[in-house]
Image 1 (spheres, rainbow, N blue to C red):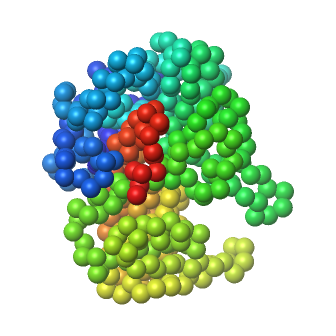
Image 2 (image 1 turned 90 degrees about the horizontal axis):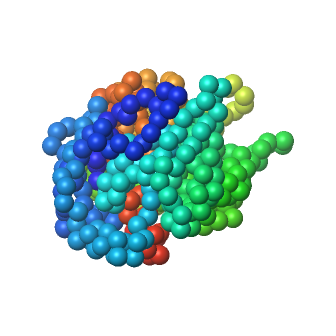
Length: 392
């Protein structure tokens, strides 16, 4: 499950067509029948170190497992294959999802006019089809969000039967409530815009808070990325008695508790952060015992890495033997890289919901792919099967 994408060519040119898979790196996925969950239909084999600059395995034609072959056969018989189109925010992940599903990415032309306006044209028919549009609303958030809306509109006007917005990283999710007067709830606004554009369903990974799903008036499939990192941590053979899961703030306790339960009900610690006033240094307290233990800090995103870096420093002061950080969404706004590579962390584990540029690689970085997870979820949505059973 740890297939790792190389940096994709820059998308800053005025025109981009995602219809030529021959120009992309090829990958090899190897069936694995010993897995515990039906989610893990097959994994990739990584033969070298995966820290630092990610390496890319290659796909061997004809290695799709029996489950996938039967799905493809049924889809051909019923002329009911899903169509997957990729925006420009994370084309490498889109290609991995298509490979997992045994499909080709749909042909689409996305370009910018001289004044920055976005132009989208589908280059194949989607009439009566179930369409899945893969687009993270990562930085530049406004550009990528607008691109998604125009893609949805293009599919709606081309008579697609169902349009699902696959949003690996749902931006604006942090603005999910009013904490002060005269604030906007941007998460609700974005949900309204996506719905009005014509989306019939949304599929998103690790949304910042659960209430954001209620902002949509259409079905939302919430994909938890925990299985990806749990598989990876299991391969490291850390003794369960030495492990403690840490929430970097009080708001993430529920997420950390769910993660700890999956790790043989590991103990939980909480970093309690309090600010005495504006521009006054934070007071940080640790709730729980981490002395001599391997601490795994769990969060949904790392932006500037201020909170998680200060929490890691506190854990070391409290006697933690090693500190790992796991987050789903690597926003990595400056000075995140400097903080994360400063020696506080044994390893920083992220997923590829947001593409990581080469300039942001550092030795402690590990990138895990969520392509299998999203591909399996899309198949289950398409086949009207249970999605929640993946995570049980």
